[in-house]
Length: 330
Ligand SMILES: [Zn+2]
Ligand SMILES: [Zn+2]
Image: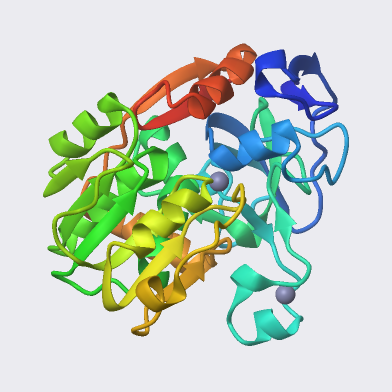
């Protein structure tokens, strides 16, 4: 099969992914073999390809927002021919203290799709049968792909931030994940305040019904109950923290941050404000979010790239050159 293969992490401007013919994945016990219909592009893929996340295996096929048809390895729950989604959390051990506590997102021995096992920038992919999600018919391939990480982890971020219906919520950064989270927040009757660099991202936020939109140096006009940050930047985290009311929460939706700058505890964190990270996802997050997405007919804004343009797709994510999400179609 054809796959976009990473042999050594390098800056994306050097086009590190190479379209290569590799052996088809072989069916394995407990796994389903998928013919990939679409694979979303996530900022985490960029961190893998550029080496901010250290390589687990080489070569590697990135991609962890896979929509595919089951062509082998069906189970009682997942039938042959059914269309399923695969996300970042490709598997857990089920036995560690975190799995036992129902916190499988924190598993000590997780499998990550497109990082510790091959992902979906390819024509075929293998996935653990108990970690794939049947996709509602209401969500077509291109719309479903960005939901599988950007959407699910954005949804988890809102949960981690403790968002209650009707609250004032800030979204700091407005890429693939935030443009899906705003739809969830509107379904929950929240007021959404968006702070982001890039005029086209601000225009998109306004068109999606944000109550207030500003650039990265502007502060929302009112104290926020919750905020979620999406940029891999500690400065953005501090900007979000400085926008909170007492008792408010910032959830950091980023697997990697450049750094956290020194900040004034007395002014910014005192008053029971909280700073929390968001790590991975649980299968319950995925099921709950996909059901809600189908119910509210969530339609991401997508830009399609063919498999041989995987580098260009990642470059576009890095440069904030597209609005919404990039999706690779093999
Ligand atoms: Zn575990
Ligand atoms: Zn992701």
